[in-house]
Image (cartoon, rainbow, N blue to C red; front, side):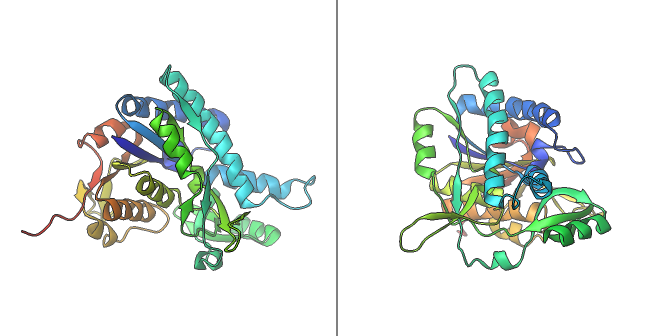
Length: 307
């Protein structure tokens, strides 16, 4: 079976943890343990988030007096692909001796006139008190917004249209390679209408939506979205909270999930299932094997035909 795995930021960093190298290395050991069993039996493509990491790099770049201007988000995204991809590749190689592992720098094409460029919504970086966030916004020309636990920078998050290296990922899969790619949703680029030439874009693409597109293009059987909760909850955070173990795409879209957390994961799962007829699931990292085998997580399946 061909599986595309989307590792959420909360799978790489536990809630409240700072994105230091030692902390991430410890968490990536958990990732390797969780995914190794799946890799023994299946073709595996792994994508990952980069929200905390790209936020840290952006702050460092903006404060670096040696730079004439801060590094743009597309290049910062490329840096996070290299950093996280290297940690994942090394750890998976240790967990899967003899298996080919490749971390691939990956670009995702977006539309230059996507309305998301005028409405920044994607949270990146750490949480700040309101006054500190507003001061950073004034100093650096950033947009900030309130998250569930404080204030964070928000950036444009256009829709993924095409992943440039899909054919390369496919070729690597066919020779038995575990592929790490499309980190942070892919390095955002726009394509010239006449020449096809690529230019970087000031954005961070939602990694779950990119994972769904990649899974569709690779004709994957299963899209596995991993986070830090065991499944989707209906009425989350209320006295009526209850687990959702099975859902259809239509049910997910009418569940009213918040934009900054479960909503993009639900949308990604719904798109993949609708467009391919495959199965998607959302659940906890440590239960990855059980989720694929139907005993954990929220499984998203096509609508059953009415007979």
